[in-house]
Image (cartoon, rainbow, N blue to C red):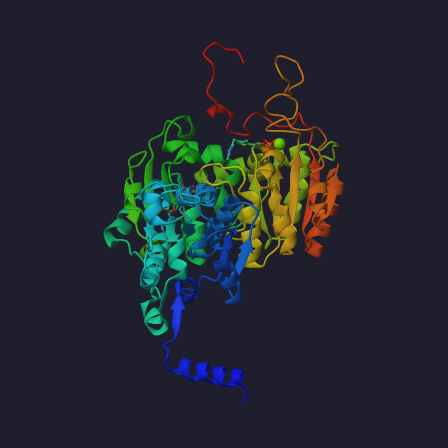
Length: 581
Ligand code: ADP
Ligand code: TPW
Ligand code: MG
């Protein structure tokens, strides 16, 4: 028997008596897994590099991005798609700040997300003694999210994550910050005690049942309506109460208007869809039922020219009681989760429900058909360079042929025109800039959509919008994701034709390099790059991308003069009182 064997045997014998140990790294991983949170979007570095490695080794899917903001947008949209908090993981101070924009965006959009950031030594940070990446991250995060927590002891990791999960998904969903100081990861504790300290969150988003009196009030008003309208918002898409919503809409016979990310909850081609008669229904409706949509700027705050002169009564279904009366008086507040509220409304409607007056539904139908007919020839033009309508006509057909694919969309003209032109057929297939109209969400959303759903993704991006997140094409190629990016390249922001008022060598503030080849970017990483000058070329390239599932970037050359200032919201630009630019 050699000396070495003896020692080994001794060590083995001793190990039997030593209690099994765990540490902060493993407790965080175990807590995430226990709660079914098995995908993490982030960027590695001190103090979370080893955490990422260990999480991957433990079977968590860890997707490393090139910038935390994009990882954050991925986590936010994963929350929207799955009703579970999307997890974003960042390093301290600068990484944390890069992720914070996305956390605020998640909160603004009511998406559940948890930003987990490593942080530096508390004792040094609080005395401001200049630690590595020093920042009081908890204090910075607090005003920008729904809740913020810090865990200092390994034994509290289970409770800390449970609180973060509940805060993210219960009531109105939102972004939560979870601060994990570097020292926590290495803290050791008894493994059995560690296991017992973990919390499996039961019923994280409990049903919130509406009061029967609120349901009756809402139905009485709806029944009395002469020109009723239902507006579906992204809260309705998030709720995953698709069948109940469809039943409510169809049983009531009321025209419905989907907000951008609620498109497809019922198909845009549904006979009751009023998407193509938006101005008419907003102006003329007398009773408006909002389901998971706020009366914010996107609905002109429920007043003014958009809403016309006629008196209106609002029925508002939302989980957040304080949303009621936020902009105009709500005649019938229905507070609860959308699944429960809509089910109660359907039940309250009983066996038969009077159809809305035919003169109203016929007027909506006529307006819609008129607008669709007006648009049709523009979508079939074969101009080169393409205009927006020619290119979008192609993509409209592609989406019709691939109704399961997920459409990601950002830009100004590229967003506003695509939203109107491209019909959606299934719920949660359209992802876009959301409540803030933020540029740069596209690649993060495309990645998360592919990862969370396994479905093909078509990302329709303005050239400016793409520039905010374009480096993530490497991420798309690295993980072999079935994402086809179409860059609407009009040489700039809104238009590529602006000139510097002073002449000189600096270009105008809104234009980019003319004739840029965005398709070359993806080629650097082994993806497929295509230049498309005509609608036919675009059709072939997108078709090939969706058929192959290979990461593809199509540079769609759009007439630089085709767009308008700020797309459809140019009216929001302040004007100089002096009338000059
Ligand atoms: P949109 O931009 O599509 O009009 P908003 O983001 O303005 O939609 O509104 C979404 C609304 O949906 C928010 O007020 C939010 O509180 C609400 N909401 C989100 N999830 C639910 C749910 N499960 N049940 C009820 N309301 C919800
Ligand atoms: C984070 C302001 C709104 S739209 C837009 C910018 C910069 C780009 C529009 O150009 P694009 O589309 O994408 O090429 P198109 O088809 O009209 O040419 N920073 C952030 N968010 C916003 N919204 C802006 C700036 C903006
Ligand atoms: Mg552009």
